[in-house]
Image 1: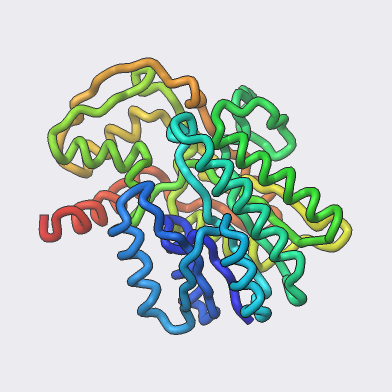
Image 2: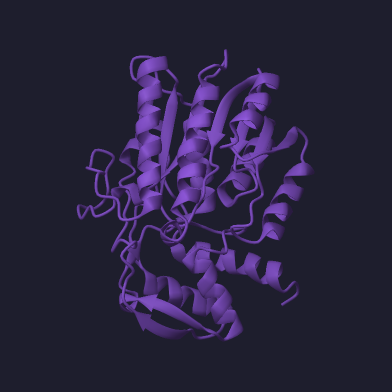
Length: 325
């Protein structure tokens, strides 16, 4: 049987597909290789996957209904789906909101509609986001908290995905797990993320913009821990009585951004040039994941603290940008 991984050339999609292939699964990857950030990085991830036995690739935008229907029509053996394709980036959603509705809402609907017609579908795991918690001030964030105060268009689209998934579970019994990711970082990461941008600027001796004096807090979650949680959930579909569930997946620890910057400075061997600024309206003050539910289901426990994960990222960063640096 085949596992479909959408967004396979993306940061999380690449790592999840790699882990699935390593254990002998057959993986069909889908990605449109858009230019939101450097396509060379996406192509490099994809190139590594193409070298693995059991991997095949289909280039498509998940919101392209015709191409996705053609894919599913020819791949009746798909029994599990990891749907990670999305337009990412909280702040960019204020610049181009239409791209987020198209990729995140329409793309999710296309996958849901195709999934419900798969005769052997066992489980659909999809990416939500900690951003859905919006203006929530109760920490740690728990799955039962209210999520009706999004602070960005991106967050609103991810909440819309959760609601559509609930409807498809109720109406058609599509077994689904939505994972609310908390600030994922690590090797092969996304250049638009703050930690990556900080590293690039510090290495180049350029200034970085630090909001609210570095006091903002994030639940930084290392990619290997994320992959372990995704794969663990994929193996445990919900039952027919309650076919849809939502789970946090994070490091279960909230740390200040200035701690992140200090660790980057140490790993890069250079001080950061800081420019202070006020927090943008789309940014929340803190994220912090309660992971009890996913731990109970899968045994998930994050094992990589920030002071271990950042040096690993920097080692990859140096090799990617300046081999032999």
